[in-house]
Image 1 (tube, each protein chain N blue to C red):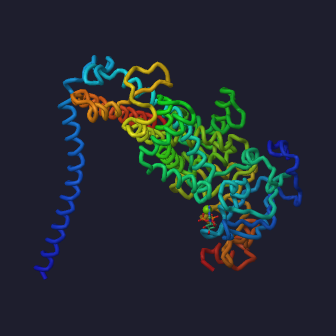
Image 2 (cartoon, protein in one colour):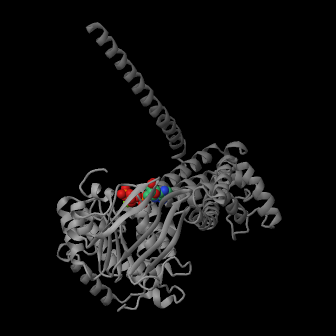
Length: 287
Length: 273
Ligand SMILES: Nc1ncnc2c1ncn2[C@@H]1O[C@H](COP(=O)(O)OP(=O)(O)OP(=O)(O)O)[C@@H](O)[C@H]1O
Ligand SMILES: [Mg+2]
């Protein structure tokens, strides 16, 4: 009896131990990989990054000089992308969450298409953007084409996160507002959207992260001219394409590639933490 | 009617008159999809009365209340048939202005549901929606209704802090104040005390009793003692053949002391029948 009990206790302890090792192991492996990359990049890149690196144009195919024009192009592409994607996503998410029932045919159809779009490889978006924006609409290789193509790639993820955010606002607010004779539009503007702000910001973080890291969709649309763009119809090279080009096509470009990756990482971290901070601030404000 | 109600003045085609009582339903039925929630409810309420709606869970009391301010319009696949008259208004008329109607027929929910705004804005927001924008005017109304619900002294120093920081009982009184600010004629209350502790519940109950005659009140409650204490009349709903029905309605004395129906007798004496 005693023997049996202690044995079963032993097996339980054994299982618990195995589970703990597994869980911790995965966690450490994942953070380890990220840390390894981060440390490697910082190690190689930190030497190059300076104020001068950020404020001078690339020379000699990017081997020398800095990345000022690249940063400007990246910023412009991102601005075009968010400027189009956010209003469109907001409108679609409101339509899906507030004006179509969950089992409505149209809504389900839209949702399914979005989920499929979210899974489409970005190179396909790049080819589509090239065919549609660059050629059909005649925008050529330009920041505008690139930004609009990026908007297409991040729309699905933006729409779905905002929709989920709106749906998670308790129905109590909708019923309460309706029972006080508040119109649906006012309820949406004053009650529902403010409550959905945190999820909107989460969607923005995901979308911007994807947009900044995107290369494949931009090669065929915004091109890779590394001069400072003078208008949205100029071609412009984004940071991720710059990195790709330096490391794959330019012998001797490794050092500046490392430095650019470091800038990209810092930029991502910065966007992530400001957005999280904003969202916390908002939560605090509305409580 | 003494006051001209916004809903009547804006909708002339909404006129109806099939009874002398203030609030009347005729052959009212409601179904969610093909599931009948209640059917054939014929019910009359006089102006200024407090009516308790009682009955077991799931017999359609909440659904019944939601018909009276057309909140049912918000539920997908919910169908209502029959006739409803409040004052001289035909509620079922599809052309009725539901926004004006809901101003005239207020509703309090089982779970207090203040907006995630400040106490002040909770009351001001619906008022502004109905066109009252003057700051002094708003302040005056807000103070008056907060006094009416006995909340003024408790919150007058923190009108600008979040309503979600209030206790459950205070939140429920704020919700009542928010409805009263719109000067409704009818108040629909769906178990307004059930989420509250006995003391808060007592305060809210006294508040409701103090509204007698000023408003016509329909209150759903599972607390029979409470129904007996505050209501002038009562109505018992019961599930029969899979759907809710109005079994008996009448003055509280009748329902609790001399019921005409055996189910009422059993329910009122605390048995299951
Ligand atoms: N939105 C809805 N969709 C589908 N069915 C519903 C919905 N709301 C209520 N019902 C159903 O309608 C019936 C009546 O519900 P209702 O909420 O009106 O009962 P109730 O008398 O208020 O019950 P309780 O005392 O528990 O609040 C129930 O069987 C319920 O399952
Ligand atoms: Mg109910």
